[in-house]
Length: 96
Image (cartoon, rainbow, N blue to C red; front, side, top):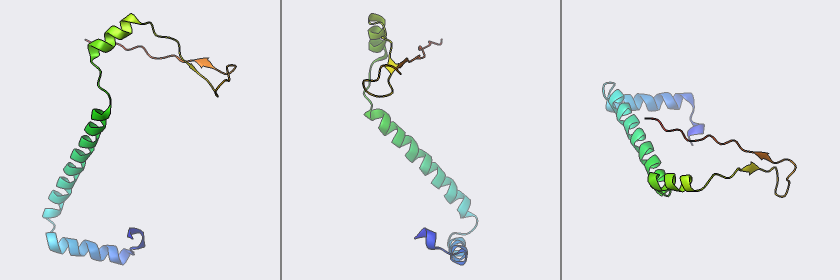
């Protein structure tokens, strides 16, 4: 529907909005709309983060200390060992 609007129709819509709300209130409305969009985005990220399984940092550190990391390889296709290569993973660094 929005793709069918002609330039004259868009100008008419903008004029009606200006008449209804006034030029002074439009920046405030745009600002509040931006704040609402930011809040919605942060809440969506929080919901995604809540869905991930939570592990205690101490438990993960203890498990990593007990088991040495095995080298991982990437294979081009299942069963193809001629083109596999080792993966260099970044080691976690601790900062104080």
